[in-house]
Image (cartoon, rainbow, N blue to C red; front, top):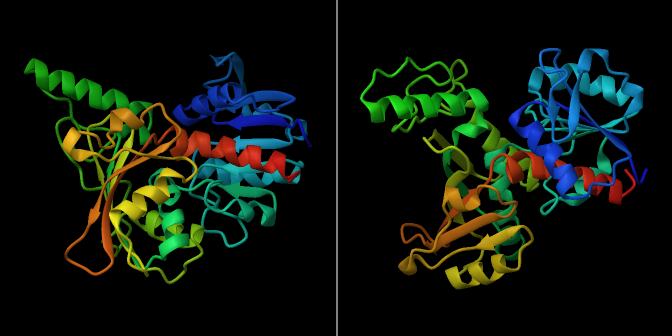
Length: 334
């Protein structure tokens, strides 16, 4: 269908709002666009679209549904939309590791959408921005190991987290008492919390770290790839930063990597550290490209390099990728 009827489920949230804006900015070929959310948000106007109550929606009115309302909603409502005849692009973690559900980054594995059975999953934001950089390196030089260290912005947690950071920062600067943390386990203002999401019983890795490790293997089709991650939350409003250490199968110089990535889709190389040019969160925020710099040899291990990767976690890390997947589905008649 060249002009699908589109539903944005979770349209009142931070990512949902961005999806609605991007559908308009990118002139997505929709016959209609409907925002759906809980009854609490019904009646709110976002990007010129009035939010409707998901519980009251006639699902047969939609051909394509972009979900950004959390795993619980995706688990319950995703199959309902599929049963009603729609294709679902889901932003939550619920379907990502389902072997029947493709996990897609259009610049990396667009062919994966061909095998969908009604649901296509959007990767985790921190995983996604790294994949756009790592896939060209994998194709040219191979990958033997990946180590992720992330510095993740509070917008990834939602509007309440943004408000908590702002109120705490104001209190600290004013010399006033800081309210107890509600969104995060500790104060986020002027602090770094080495925990993103939760710890499961008996596991020293957080759920976010487990996502990065498992999703990287699935997206790159490398089920045995050695990969580890440490994810931290930092007092940045928007834009995730990552230190990524890779070991390639073949020798690769920083200049070769720069030249390769300069021609990679969705990637912008910013790498002249002596002149103060390297990716920063404030540079990545508001952009769809993933920025990469600080490309250098890791002298502690053979065939190893360090990279610094920055991306807008609300755009490419979530909303933009979902819209790109939707565009891919339309282009391929899927």
